[in-house]
Image 1 (tube, rainbow, N blue to C red):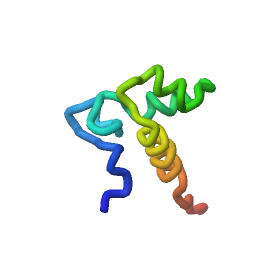
Image 2: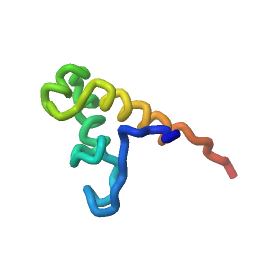
Image 3: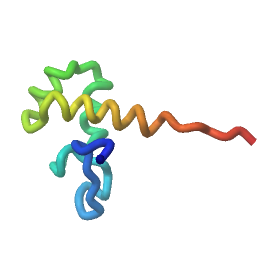
Image 4: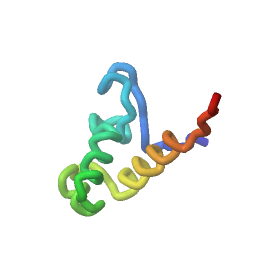
Length: 73
């Protein structure tokens, strides 16, 4: 089972950056809107092709990307 089926990567689209469901909406686009203070409903209004589960998937994806152990030397 794919861990993030709503998050896709394609080397020929958006420079290979993670996108939402094959669209040209990058995970960083969604995260940037949330970081400016918009709520999920406002993000959905700004990007009407998205679904609520897409925004949640972006948050989970970002959380997993930064949650890795760092070995101290």
